[in-house]
Length: 292
Image 1 (tube, rainbow, N blue to C red):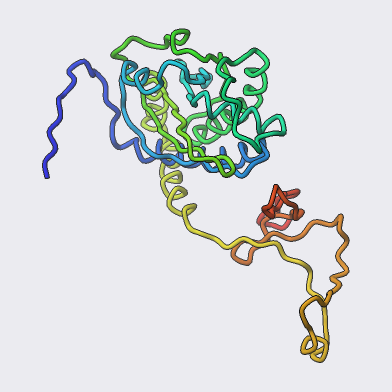
Image 2 (image 1 turned 120 degrees about the horizontal axis):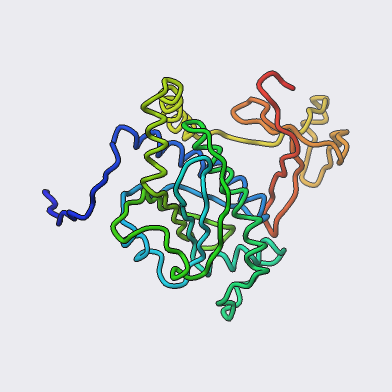
């Protein structure tokens, strides 16, 4: 079926489609690393994933932001242009609860105005997250993220003219058992062009873009991950006589971490613990390919 839509002649810029896979792969990498960072910051199992990547005018961006979002503006130095990260007020209030050690109950409905203290706490969550974004994009162009401001009203954020274009990534954020929430990442075309020019001008950038595409495919493969206790030797008679309630000593000190393996390969060492009613593993040490 053919879909017909109106063309907006105010749109003077579009992104060359040959760069979309590399940019999309960089955002996928950011989502994976951001998942780990948020899980650590919020002390809750968190999942971040890319839903879509679109070209939108600033007018369209402000329309989806609404009147009362949480807005974090940031730079990717040394690139010119200011980008924006958006979450709903309800989501950031839950993040505040988790960050401060609460979150077992729904967020207080009367918490509708963010204070300077709230922004200070949220800054401690958002700044490392933006650093993960910069790290992911640095495979294409070396950048460093700098948080510029945090606002709770779109009226205080005027980044561009109504028709200026942005590359907008819609992401899905799940924290603990809460319903998934939306996170918006908007990069102005002025900034995106500097990244794509780096891809065009250098062979290293082109090689990195290829690696990003390959990585985005390879890293989607599912792997079984488990904690492994050291083996213990029992006689065949002892094994045959095992019954419900029997206790087997592993001679493994409680303070010593367990091996964490993925598809049989040692990747980390971790302690077993719990969060609420769920069993979790807290990673203490990463293990490199050479075993160091």
